Amino acid sequence: MTRIAVLISGGGSNMVALVRAMQAGGWAEPVLVLANDPDAGGLEKARSMGVPIAAVDHRDFKGDRPAFEKALSDALATAQPDILCLAGFMRVLTADFVAQWAGRMLNIHPSLLPKYKGLQTHARALDAGDLQHGCTVHEVTSELDDGPILGQATLDVAPDDTPETLATRVLPLEHALYPRVLERFVAGDKTLLSLRDVNVD
Ligand code: GAR
Image (cartoon, rainbow, N blue to C red; front, top):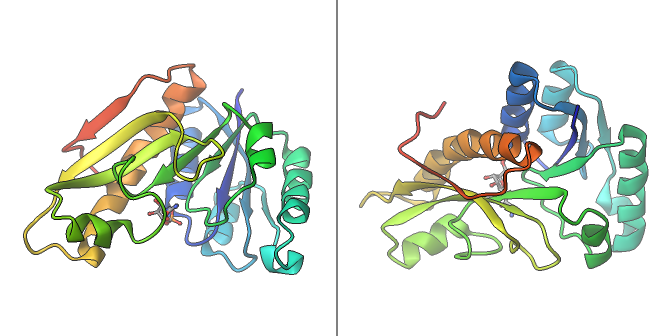
């Protein structure tokens, strides 16, 4: 069975959606949830779902990214994943690390890429007057928030939306999109999945 590691930095709601879908569907095995912060709330959630957890605190490496990534790689080596899923993992990875996982690493980003790479995506969509907004799952390449797009979920921006309401409305779309894209990816399907008006949790 395909082995999946999920990398998180915070609450890990996307990780929970991925693990639930794998455990319910049996199409892949979550073998590790790895955080760059030992206090990441998602670690306890993963543990309670029976998934092995590990943390590599990036602050211990004082900006030495290769050393941080060596520690990440050591943690991953124990779990032997086939695919890495970045799920709210807020550290930028070096080109070397990305190259080691070329074609085997996915990310979810809270915008309709190629729009709004980086941070503050919801505020930037509002500032631009966008009528539609959403989230994207893509393959990770060495360019930040770039790489082939595998799936997008879209919603209509409401006149009274704020960055906070958009974040709240986009997150369930992320939870619907990411597991579906991962399941297809595991099966070798890299064609674009577009979700609109999905029933979300
Ligand atoms: C999600 O909205 C995810 O798209 C975003 O962080 C949040 C993590 O939430 N990721 C990025 O902004 C990556 N650049 P979660 O920890 O509850 O899954």
